[in-house]
Image 1 (cartoon, rainbow, N blue to C red):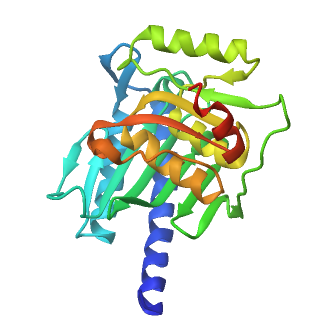
Image 2: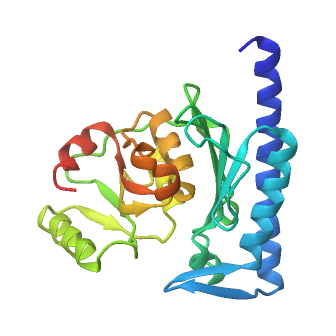
Length: 262
């Protein structure tokens, strides 16, 4: 990629970041104004904010990157004929919808770009917390402009973030809690996988495990962790883009220590 093209792409990413911020702020305004909610499943909700944010970002992405496809939690796969090679933007307009609906601050907008079967770019924006995470493959990970570097937790001080997938048996999750308890390993479940993955990159938690995540919840956060120096799984294997996959991501030493258990 020549210098001119690099500058063009960088400028496009800056426009997209501004659009993500604007969409997140719009979600805040919609929440303040009152929400209409549709129940998709147990603890699985969609509000008009989810739909509005996804549509707004889809339009911006189409203008900036007209040759790329799109995969959104609400609208599905659009304009992508070959998911192994085409560039695809993957969006969760509001991850942590239950938290968002309750007025909690632990929710985010997640945007990732996949091409050549690799995660190329990731944004995670938590409007209520004023946290904008950004990562580009080979270029590092950043939180509000400051570069992130993952550090190993002190011995016995690790805190693992957890997610609970309704697509896997409840007993699997209960067995995991027993394993962590026996190992005297602290854990937290905050209800927004994309943001918890981003917080691994910034050291708020030291690792994140979930038996199944969809790609729109996982990809941006995984790139953040990788670019900050952490260990991540090959999420895209076995058609993970469309089918989802298990996630265990952490600082490298912690990942090795707990991988066989998880």
